[in-house]
Image (tube, rainbow, N blue to C red; front, side):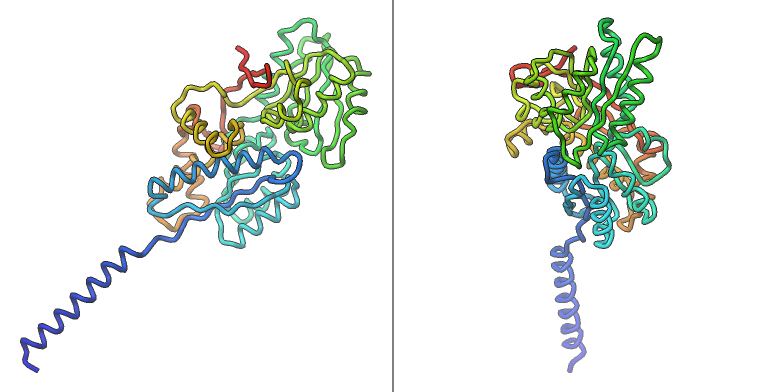
Length: 380
């Protein structure tokens, strides 16, 4: 073979190889970034988890439309923890076995007792939308929260009733199945409300896990002759209690926690929840463009108003995504992402800035709502 011919053939082969490599590179896709989501998606109190999942999916769609994170598509593996601590632990173990480092969840504070030790042991990172128990505050662990401590919520509740001198005896009706949330609010409320004396806080526990006799429970409340009532429960249970109060024709001020601030309260409570007050961690009247765009998308997709858990799940995704994007390496650890989130500190949420402190705890504004004509209405 002539030297020129041989050189030409080698050149052609190299060109073919280069062209093939070029098209192979174009067609090759980065491995997706897989994130777990675990929440209660079934049962009477499932709206918190379902709404959270829905809000998260909007955030995922948005980030993927922008090219993902470092060119990687974000995918979500959804698990139903059934709002049961043991089941929640099992879902986290299953996610870990799938090689997943990051979890958005869980939605109720009582999940933390079982799940957090495992999360910390395996050095995963959990970003929770709504686990607000003050017992989780100021801990150097693998938990990031976009919700403020329920201690702030309790103090806000106390201030509402302190402004009414006719209210001296308050009954706190609380779900002990979520004690990490409800009992903490009960205790901080009592501490704040009873300051100065001449005021009394009573409490009555029930368990949503064991079944509830709503009428019998409310009769016990009425027999205690409180001036006002606080209900710390899911929206469904709060609605059922209000139904029994309406049935007994008892009139008293009723204040609900942010846990009850979902559409289940109105759909199951009907006329019985008209006029109740609800503490809210979101401003449903927010005029922020980010929130308005999100709310429009949520209504179009799910045919209902976004609840606080939908907003906070979207915010949790934003915080996690920004932490990952801050790192150049694609082989990242949970510790690196946690450190990046804490270093960034301020994140643009749907309704304003989310400030994350050195422990991964957040602080947020609190609002007061009532129900008028089947709608949540903000109280100034």
